[in-house]
Image 1: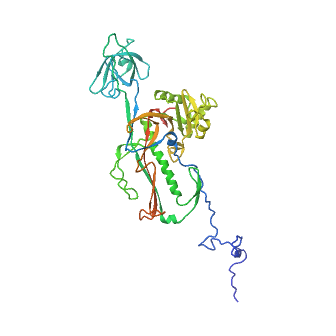
Image 2: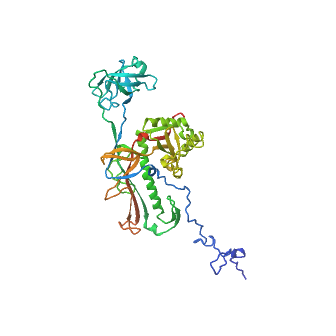
Image 3: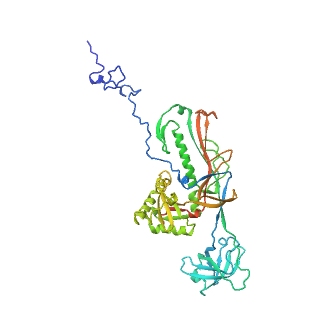
Amino acid sequence: MGQFASPAQGAQLNHLTPRPTQSLFNDNYLSLSDMVFTQQFLPEVYEKEVERYGNRTISGFLRMVGAEMPMASDQVVWSEQGRLHVAYDDITVTAVDNVITVPAAAGGGSKNLVSVGNTIVFADSDGLNVEKCYVQSVSVTSGGVASLTVAAYSGAAIDTTTYGTLGDNRLFVYGSEYAKGTSNAGSAIDASLTTFSNKPIILRDKYAVSGSDTAQIGWVEVTTEAGTSGYLWYLKSEHEARIRFEDQLEMAMIEAEQSAAGITPAANGSNGQPLGGGNTLTGTEGLFAAIEDRGLVYEDANFGGTIGLDDFDSILQELDKQGAIEENMMFLDRSTALGIDNMLAAQNAYGANGTSYGVFENSEDMALNLGFSGFRRGSYDFYKTDWKYLNDSATRGLIGDVEGLIVPAGTSTVYDQILGKNISRPFLHIRYRASEADDRKMKSWITGSVGGNYTSDEDAMNVHFLSERCLCVQAANNFVLLKTNPAVTP
């Protein structure tokens, strides 16, 4: 008689012995080799999201140093005062002794600012040859170039042998001298001012989720960038889209550039939707662009790694030539912040000439809570902090060319062309479009047919974000941009 083989013997049967209750034993589990269509033991899933990058948002810089104000126009215009005294730094010495020329651009078009009877200090670009001179005659050509005949009080000749022909000599008016009984003395000089303007740009973004995806709910425990915690499901991505857009609102104000010739956008976007084809994009002036155009840029081979008091004093000398604003805030990358710490540690335990907290109501706790530490050098107070935007590897930290920024504290008094009066505002502030009908500071709305909102037949929920804004950088000559330039010798 034949013998049937047993289907399983000994240990082979152990893991297939059923149990009357839903209890875990070492002999009642099903392995993948037994049942390939299911798995009784699911993977252990951590529901809490791991914060591998910590707080990822970089916004907050403009909120700390500026303000946000509404406007109703397509453009914001303001005026800034000019220099009080008359000075030029591009003077040419002619072949005729004691005759010098002032270019039209320096002289304010066809109107010359140096008159007969003025006494001037005339010097070459290095300041090695300096003469006090009297202006004997002035002749202005139709092109606005002023030809001045001068006489040095020392009797020396103002000639090309001493002062060269490169057109980089300098002069400033320090007074005047007239003989007895003089009439028609002096000259009228209108107050000089410069008008600046900027225009807002429209920033947009959106988050979209299909109706099918909203039905598959998966909970994730998260801690938001604002510090709150809780559970989110499919709208977690909407939350990140929102904070990413809020970051871009600040990044755009920092990085934006004006277009030299205008840019025409594509007629259709990647999703086939119109993007305003035919309309010209002109851009807007951001913080970095404003400083590089009319502010101070300090370049060094490695400012952060080699900074010393000599480097810092060079910056102070430039600030002396500008507004000489006493209190300034420094926003730095890690390397520059450590370089300044090392510089101060070499002086004494409390920084050069002691530690200062004046801009924070002289409260050390308030300064430290904001991440600032202060020190005084010369007649200036500086309050430094790390700027995450310069350290994050997904923003300026990816490039590393900007090492820091020095921003004057306080406000400036300017004439607002729209309001028609003098106003005091922070040197840095944002203007956004707003009216009684629409506030475009930060708009958010939902379209589609999912989530209780029925505006179209699209089987999706679209969360839209929009803002229209620009940055006003007033008195940019008091800002300092710290940059790395490998071509500069340390």
